[in-house]
Image (cartoon, rainbow, N blue to C red):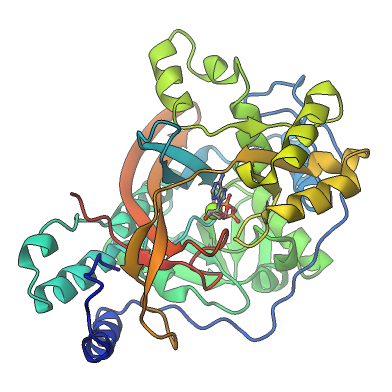
Length: 442
Ligand SMILES: Nc1ncnc2c1ncn2[C@@H]1O[C@H](COP(=O)(O)OP(=O)(O)O)[C@@H](O)[C@H]1O
Ligand SMILES: [Mg+2]
């Protein structure tokens, strides 16, 4: 999407829609359509106390039964002793440009994705699409202001580093993928980067791992007879991804193995919204950056207000605040993938129902970030092109590889811009709401 004059005629719009659509296809930027049936289960909440990131056993994280199940795997792996020595993180931290009270814009974090942070592949292609369309529209100068971006290369470099540290030429990188692989093209760009390095990749589902997977006596993971050095999860972050007990068993087997997992179970749990809220509490960042108050300050400046709904006076205050002005907040359950958050009057409905029970601790409350809307065109399949008020969300890809305690790689490898119409409160590209975009520096 590109800022465009509102004087554009219907005919011009029709031509640009066709032209841009063809460019998108030519540049291999595709996403498979939404299947007509989507399951949407809402599990009832149960609660466990778990150590927060950094092993603070005094902080408690309230969870629902999905998170509780993940936590049981975490406990089991800890009990057996972690066999994996290589840790691989491919994260994406998402931000919106908040207008602030006095109109000074600042980046505020929406969330950090530690599991299947997607669109690093496709966003490596979008700069070419926008540059080309801008040039064809006679806007050469603007086309040169579209930033270079290649997260696919950086993500693959991190996976390759983990693969090398694992130390077996025969071993493969396994992409653990969905039943219906809608975002396959996004993943393919990363796979091609690995093949370029002569690293063999395979794509398998939970079911394949359950049926053909095993651990040898050293806990090396074999799937279909191939030793797996790295498991890159692109599936498994939603309750509905776990369709049977076998799925859970397959997850547990991978977690117990020597293979580097992206993410491993503890990093998966660290990406929950509850942990995000705990990190924003006074004194918590200080534990992670001892003696570096300026770093703490810089990181904290990107946090929006995050509030606990734990039982007790502080949580009661959060409830009161949310009920008094729901439009200032977003209520978030421990879910990923878009479309789960609660806004506006629905916040009151939900909180009225759970405010007196510990069920409320399955949620956190967050200040709503308010970016200034920009007029823009969103090119979407089967939708007429028309100007709308748009909001953008900037994702920043960060990768790290650790061997034991030593950090081998820790880098920022690119970005993702997603833009949606301001009429939608929630929802990303996968949910069919946002489109892939590029920042145009002004
Ligand atoms: N604090 C917030 N202020 C404004 N919009 C938000 C806020 N939190 C989430 N959103 C919107 O909801 C979407 C989904 O929220 P997010 O926390 O990223 O959950 P998910 O894990 O489902 O992606 C975001 O992409 C953003 O558009
Ligand atoms: Mg998100």
